[in-house]
Structure formats: C-alpha cells, structure tokens
Length: 476
Ligand SMILES: Nc1ncnc2c1ncn2[C@@H]1O[C@H](COP(=O)(O)OP(=O)(O)OP(=O)(O)O)[C@@H](O)[C@H]1O
Image 1: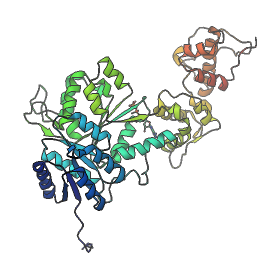
Image 2: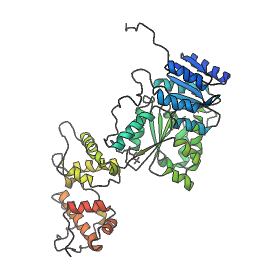
Image 3: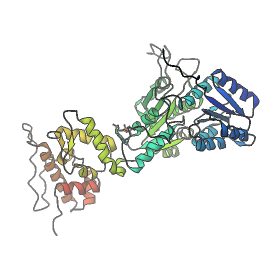
Image 4: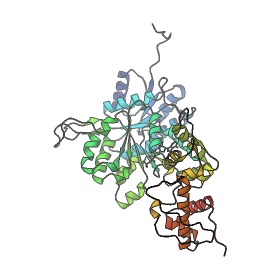
C-alpha cells in the first residue's frame, strides 16, 4: 500500500475577475465542476485585495472592469506573482486585445462567448504549469540544461527569454538565418512548456504543394477527394495539446494564410469533407529567414496573420556574431561525432582557423565542416587542412594553365588523373586552392576585395585563406 499524506492535497485555487454577474457565475460553475476552488472579484480593487492574502494557481480576468482594464492586472500579476498565470476573457472578435494581453504577459486568452470546452483545456494547461514534479519552471528558477549551446551574452539572453515565454500560449515568431538554430529553439520552447508531454510537429510550409495544403494542415474525411481512401488527421490534429512549428512561414500561399488565420483565431479546424469543426489546442511557433514585415509590405504576407503570429519575437543571431561560442559548440559536436573508444579532437590552430570563417550556413555548416573534416582526419585528430573551409570552389578549377602572378608561385597543379588518387587529399586541395586564389589575384592585379568577389567569398575569408596558404603580395 502506498503511503498516504496525512492531509488531502488542496485543490488548486482560481480567481475569477469579472463584473458581469452572468459570465462570472458561468466561469465559477465550470471551474467548480472541474474540482477547483474559486474566488471571485468584480473589480480590479477587489482582485488586488484577494491577491494579497491568497496564492492562486490561475487568475482569469475580463478585459473591461469598472475601475480599469484587465490588462493592468495582467501586468501586475506577471510582475509580482511570477508563478501565477493570468488568462484574459476578450470581447468577441477582438484580436487586438488578445494580442495586447499576450504581449503584456498573459498566459492565454479566451474570447466571448466563452466555449466551455476551450475554457477547460486552457485551465488544465495553466494548472500544469505549477503542478507536481513535472512543473514548468518559473523563469526565476535555475534553468534546466538547454540544448541551445553557447555562453555568449546573446545566447544566455535567448535561453532566459525562452524560459519565460515557454510558460505562455503566446505565438512566437522566430527569425534567423538558415542553420542558426530556429528549429532547435522551437523545440526548446516546447520542451520547457506545459505541453512537453504532447507532440511537437514541425512543418516546412515551403515544401507542401499548394493543392495539398488544406488537407495536410486540417486533415480530410474518407472520400473528400479522389484518392482520399481513409480519414486522415492533419498537422493541427497531430499537434493537439502540443506545439505546431510553421517553418518557412513566409512561403505560405495567400489563400492558405487566410485559412490558417481562421484556425488560429477560432482554435477550431474542419477536415476537408467534414461538416463539423473540431476544437484544437495547439501552440503556434513560426519561423523564417525572411523579413516577414517586408513580405507584408510587398503584399506576399497578410498583415493580420503577421500580427497574429508575431506576438513574441525571438531572434537567433548568426554564428559569425557569436564566435565566442565556437569552442562550446565545437566540443558538443565532436562529442556527438566521436564514440567512447574513438574520441575526436582538434589539432593546433583549428579553432583559430574556424574563427576566421564567416559561416554563412551557421551552426549547421559548422556541423558539416567538422563531420567532413573527420572523414579526412588521421587518428581522429582534425587538423587545419582537414577543414577545407569553403573558398576555393572545385567548379572553378579550369583546366587552363594558370598565369603565374608572382615569381614565388608554384607550378600549376596537374589536373587530377582519373586513374590515380592524390597521396594526400588535404594537401592536394590546398594546392588547388592556392592556384585558384593566385589566379583570381592575378586577374584583379592583387585587389583582394575584387578577388574575393570573383571567388564568391568574403574579404575576411580570402585574407584568412591567403595567410593559411602563405600567399604574399608581390613586392612592387
Ligand atoms: N545553439 C546551438 N547549440 C547546439 N546546436 C545548435 C545550436 N544552434 C543550432 N544547432 C544545430 O545546428 C543545426 C541546425 O539547426 P536548426 O535546424 O535548428 O536551424 P534552422 O535555423 O531551423 O535552419 P533552417 O532555417 O535551415 O531550417 C541542428 O543540427 C542544430 O541542432
């Protein structure tokens, strides 16, 4: 028999703040039926008085109260009672109020007329935030180990921001270059939220043919169209209770944007071929490498959907702006690439070499570079030459003999013999790279900016490669 605590656990307590007696009673009754303890207040002043001496697991407030706005309460509770989520009841169709409340720190909102099924789902989700061992940590608590590695100030701030926003339902819009960690950040938000036990579904909006989009997002009933042999769930149903990541959201066609906006606002979707709508409880995280505000200006993205998705913005810095994190990131990647018996290590100067690189493909490119370098490396130790940082493009290797710009230039690299292999690939690639850089420098009369442009690399990359390959400017 399991041990019993001497006292029965107390029911969670909710504060309902509303001056409309009818609605207040409906809310109270629903919450009581859920087994919760309920207090009510009909004004901001009454709510403040309650909050002083009682700890609530949820505050549910109307937006308009006789002595002020529910928004004030949202701000006050968020600041003074960090563990108490606040949800607001907004007027019908008032998207603005919902977004403003979420931005102010509300955990969630529900619109009038209040749908009781949605209310229950929202309340349960709020209660999970502080319940039991799986409770989602308040931002003041010690941060859990994050998969987003890095010790730079910007990454630390990002992790703190994620810990804060993970507790709410507010849609998050993530912006960042390709490979900078947008999906990882979205997964982190999900993992730290009260939805962690439910699915995380990532959808690449640019990869779905337009004709199939509605069926993919909302699902379909058997016979809804030719080929619909069975009922099928869409992404919204699959992510129910969890998080739906809309990756490359700027690629959504306009017609689909309208449907998506409706689904997000109503929290209901209708399968293709179905007559009834079904409720869905999904947190939306969107991501793009494009400038979404600019897409709105250009008319390719709807302003209303932008406003709806962009409640909380999260920006992922490019790797080149946080090169201090290279050590931590590299160590994590090498640990993953190695095994217990075969550890992977970096030779001298490798980290410095990486530091001189601009990483247009960000952390993903760093992963690829190290993975490829490991294939070249001897005994699991990656040397500078193994990195083969982009700069010399093999496509540029013309068979034409190279002009020799400097007396010290080595003889042209023989074109690869199809029957034989170079004795050392890194050495061979270095030679090829050297030849190509020299050719570009000769063409531009040693103008390094122009040479870098010719080769499609940055000035910094060229300068670094020249140092690495000991290419010097000829003396006048
Ligand atoms: N801060 C980080 N710490 C550890 N790994 C990271 C970090 N940022 C990114 N990564 C890794 O880099 C790779 C790319 O990350 P991710 O897929 O999240 O980028 P993305 O911005 O979503 O890319 P895309 O725009 O191309 O979809 C993944 O393997 C991810 O685990």
